[in-house]
Image (tube, rainbow, N blue to C red):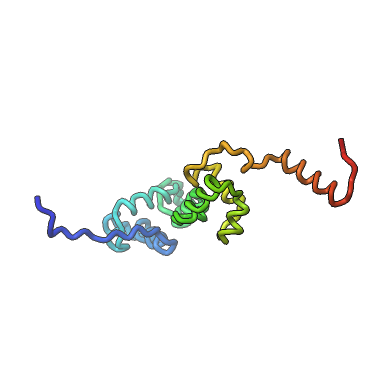
Length: 174
C-alpha cells in the first residue's frame, strides 16, 4: 500500500483543562453521551476520554441508597494536580547542551570547581545545582572519583571552625 498521499493529522498533546472536565461531567453524567461523542465534541482522542473517566470515577448514592458510578470533575482535577506534582521540577539545564558541555569540560579538563564555573561563565544556575546534577548523573562523563567536589557536613564544620578561629583569634578547641 502506497502512503505517498497520506496526510497525517497533527497531534495536539494538550492536557485537559478543568473547564473541559466539567463539560465531560455534564455530558457523561446528565446527558448520557458516549465516549465517542464526548471525544468528538472536545476534539480529543476517545482513549483520552476513557482515561479521564477512569481518573474521575466516584461511587455516589442516590436518595434511595442505590450506589452508582459517576464522573467527578473535581476528583479528576485533584488527581491530575497530585500526579503533576510527582513529575518533579524541570531541569534548569534543560536542553542547553552547550552549558552542560562547558561544565563537563571545566571540571574534567581545567579542574575548576562549580563555583568558579558559575562566576566565570555567568551561568544562570548555582554551584549546588551543578553538584546535585553531577550526583544524579544529569551531567554526563563526570565520575564521582573526585571527592573534593562534594563536601561532607564534617568538612564544612571544620572549615567553619577554622575560619572562626582566624576571625576572632580563638584558641584551638582540641
